[in-house]
Amino acid sequence: MKFFVDTANLDQIKEAYDLGVLDGVTTNPSLMAKEGIKGKEKQYQHYVKICDLVQSDVSAEVISTDYEGMIKEGEELAALNPHIVVKVPCIADGIKAIKHFSNKGIKTNCTLVFSLGQALLAAKAGATYVSPFIGRLDDIGDDGIDLVAKIVATYRYYGYATEVLAASIRNVTHILQCVEVGADVATCPLDAIKGLLNHPLTDSGLAKFLADYKKVNG
Ligand code: G3P
Image (cartoon, rainbow, N blue to C red; front, side, top):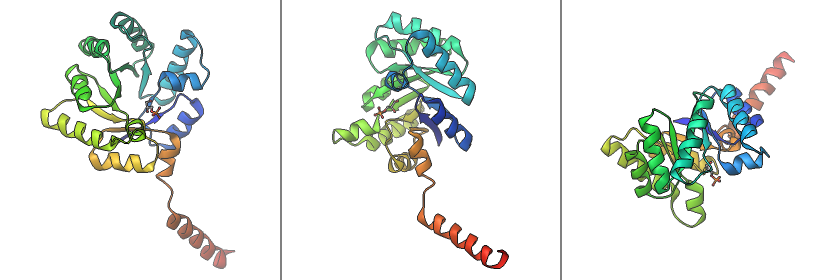
């Protein structure tokens, strides 16, 4: 399974990259705003910095909600760097825009997906990735992982090339559940990725090894 980090914070992206397990980055307008990156020029410069850092897929989201605006923005974003994936919300104009980008060989990530129906349209339009939001579905008492499982099964049954990029991941459990249901990608907060490492028996076992070594070797 591919690991993407879900942040626009360069320090966190570098830490994830240096860990040696990073396969890409996803951003969104809220994550960019959180970093205080104001204005199109600075935003575009920031996307290029991320691409140069990780040299792998980086999702950059359009802010337009109309077809013409999405096309203009998306083509500008795609022209920034070969690693840019144009992120488009799962609305009618977004699906239409994804089809346009697919026909032009521009990679896309259909985001804000909360149903199998939406995921089906994204795949039919030729999206590179579809982003079902696990955490936000769980937040309203729905079952986010169940949606991911249904999308994975549907894409495999019909042979869609679109990759299931599980998003809105909040913790280690979400990541492991994505593994169980066969998501292609999990885009995670850095802490969730690092949390996979944590086990008390590893810590106690290492402490014992070092203590036993020290007893003999000083
Ligand atoms: O960036 C897309 C998605 O992962 C954001 O999810 O619910 O943490 O805002 P959330």
